[in-house]
Length: 336
Image (cartoon, rainbow, N blue to C red; front, side):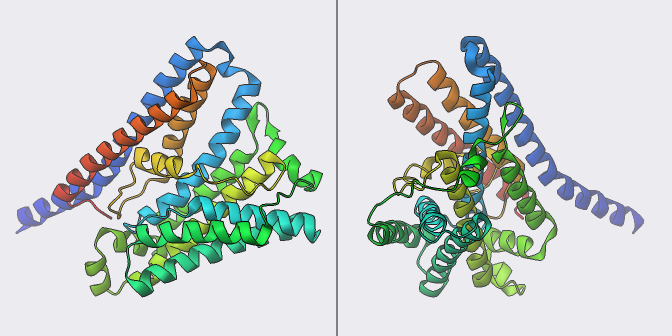
């Protein structure tokens, strides 16, 4: 009897350790690839480690990581959000309007822009759970809807007279690094706590791993899907405000190229397309890998079409890794 209990305990311990080992192996592998890439780029492009380039690189990294977080929280449910760019530009224009046209304080204007983004995310979630249509179709439609409505309301006019204090946010730095990274780390820490320690986070992962089983166990699947889309919209709004601070203007043309980086960072980082497993640290490292790759290719004077080629190739690699992880996770029963 005691031997049976001991065997069961060892089996339980093994299944508790395996998810940790899978994530640790993925993070360690990404860190090694990033270190190798940085070494190669720094040796080929002497300006890579210059203070100016480090500031530019970390500023882009801060924004791309939050864009990746925006997709990650929806991927956790087994869905996706193709309207991230449209929600982001709506937040940008709302913030610009509140700052320039109404002259509201910076904090109030940013809160207003983020509220718009969260509401648009909420609308995505409501449409998905009420219609039962896959998030791919709903968010593809709302991406066009939100972007078109934004152009109609603003008449495609940019806000270029933003307060100097707001524009200074995009230029602030700690040494050679952009201060926008502090926003990214704060968002990442909040998501880490959400998925690791909160009930809502565990419910989101449970709904993504097996929605039928989650529902039978009492998880409000529809509600957590809406919550995930609200969080996704909020993250897209934060990325939009960061872009407005970087450009020192609210431009209606922003956000249309966010789709590729939004998938690259979480997929490279270990988040499953099928849902049920996320990695906040992995998403951060995935964004680092993509940003360093883009920056290095620009410094090496590689044409923009080749950059798109390499990014597409990276996405294919990420999808291949996702497929391998999905099969492994299903066989080992690690999804959570």
